[in-house]
Length: 367
Image (cartoon, rainbow, N blue to C red; front, side, top):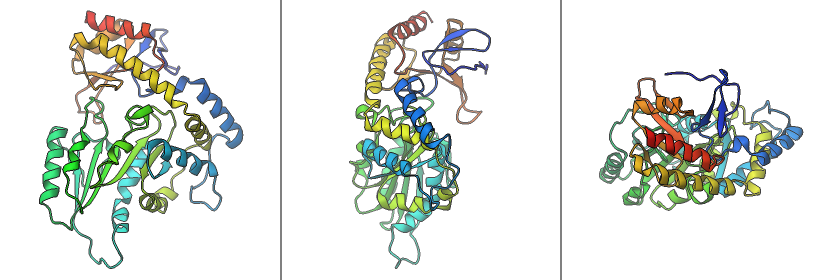
């Protein structure tokens, strides 16, 4: 795999250290917040108030209000009852996985001496953020896996606990997951559904509010959603969304207390972006760019993609090199493990212009 060093933040284009400039169709800055002037202004204000970082525990006797203010705004944005932020999306997932035994215990009365058996159901190709000690590789299709989960829960003892874990959308190879299948789960069971929405929050849902509202209609499960905020939303942090009992349990965790929080200046900028509905126009522009690109690339038969989603994938190993030779940088690398087959990913963002998208389509049609 070739490496392309640069000292410049990519936007529509990227300038490499060798002096070559390319159209940039990669990364996960789906809404283009890295180039958003309103965001930068809020961040400057935040730095002037809070400095560059907060060297303390969130559970210290001194509390910065901006964290809970931003979390309240984020919960409202996503449709979740409560939110708690961490320093990254990876840590949000791993913190949740570490605290699952305590979350499970908190769901039972003190009269229970022995907890029932717990079953973990990991979706195929799930992100490492949700890997736990019981994780095992699953190479089936997501649909077959989900059907088996439903059957396994239906056939299990009524007092057993089931933890279902999945991403909201496939990555790096884009896949669409139909969570409505879990409406067939039985009622009156102990079922927790955990979904990593890192590649959906800011992109999926009305105005990019993510998948929580949609999944909350599945009445049979206790829902928890984790996510990176450092993709579409542009904030170097992570979040866990769930009900008050779950978030309260996590807040008491030594793994939460012992971890540094995200910089408060970013939390200040984030709260202002949410309060002013600043993500909505970027989301609308992203959708326009996605639809324009999908229409132009439809006849190439090169890509797998999902409606209204900004990622176009191909397993053709020659496509990446052809794009690079024609002034376009996509991504092509093995992920999450070095032994995984590389996937060529084209990523559309909200700051791409029609001329950029038309040039991409022209090169792809030539290929």
